[in-house]
Length: 185
Image (cartoon, rainbow, N blue to C red):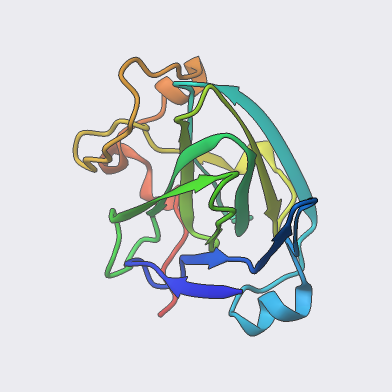
């Protein structure tokens, strides 16, 4: 697999090796040893999958203090996937990176603990899969407004469909910083 660090240190783009022929294709979606060698720690304790229609935006979500690292990819369709650094004291606090993840490119994104995460569906529908390093803990949920104008994320949707919960998240500057993870350099 090819691993590339994005403009946010610690956020990694993974391009698995795909073996294809007239029958279809095969790829390894996860190997604890190989991913650990690439700097993606484990253990992963929970796997999740969602299906969403075109124009749906999910996020920007994180947990604190039980921050989740997430290894994410798309098995059907395509999304614009976004990681936002919300670690208080980080030199890249408030910066984000966006990558297209699709069934065609088969890319994965590693989003370390301390980053908010979200995605927008750009195909007619998308099936999104992610492995998490911590269990879901509702009491630890924190969110950042998906279209916070201070962030300037270029979401590729004209009329976003966003849950009431995600629409109610505050802008990053208004999030209680005591609820955000701390940067450990």
